[in-house]
Image 1 (cartoon, one colour):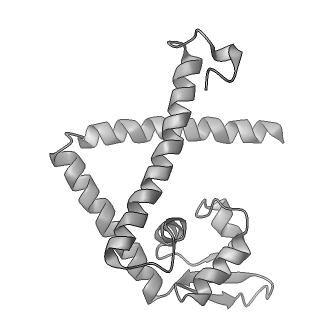
Image 2 (image 1 turned 180 degrees about the horizontal axis):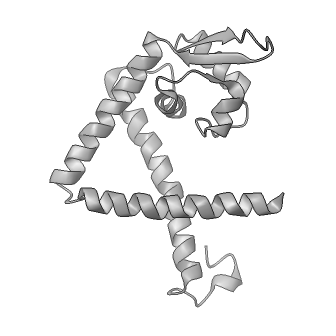
Length: 165
């Protein structure tokens, strides 16, 4: 990154460079997580949905939400909520129903098939946590520290968005 923007040159030990390195790492980790999920689903023969859809099902879990809540509760990061919801409904992973109070609003929840995907990811993540703790020497305290730092960054970014408006 520092070869593109001269502002960052010669600041390898600066907070700015460390921040850019962290941003790059966060992006790579997200892509790697999607690859891990994709590989697990290929191994299991689950080929009709992709990793982003599976992660969305995992994040919704047992909740029943509206399409609007998918974004506000951060279950969904994409642009076209309606298209993706329709796809998951058509594939039988989600059930949708019009709200009684507002017929324009649709509530969605996982079907048994969707809960199977959620459970598959839950099991995968528990297995990973066990492996990390025993083989990679990543203690609960390490994970807690990582989580606190990432939540702090999340709060910072949220504040930056709020300042725009």
